[in-house]
Image (cartoon, rainbow over all chains, first blue to last red):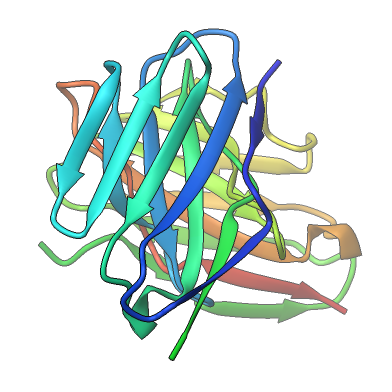
Length: 107
Length: 115
């Protein structure tokens, strides 16, 4: 079966750094994706990891440890527009999403 | 690149009616996916196509759900004899063939409300 766990909610302050964790147990692994989803909008692709280590893309970085079944998304220099749900998704034969972490950025 | 387009954006119907949603993928993408998303949950995979072939349909929620992609371009998702539990956002996504790191690009979804 597939099981993906993320915190339900997180809060942070504008300009700060926040780390959103994701743990997974899946049958098969062909990569892990992070998506951002604003309320009422489509999920948009943020990052992809298939090998262990850190992938950096501007203010966003994503880390993967396959042996630990663990990933995190790191957001730096938070802005108000970063308030959204962040979805961790693991690809095996299909793409399985976690429930998402709702991030609220306050002034 | 006009993105993934879904129609309609909203659908309100009475229980027991049939509904059909349309998805137009990004033009050069040959893979097309359908998901369902309810409040507070991540998207839940339903089915996917590679060109016109439906390669995975075991996750469709019941035999009331069916999907087609007859010419390998747009796709339709039909729900027959709708039930109140079918109320959700139905998302379509597409991706190109090739490297496994190809992300899926999502449309804005069709929000279904069953009265």
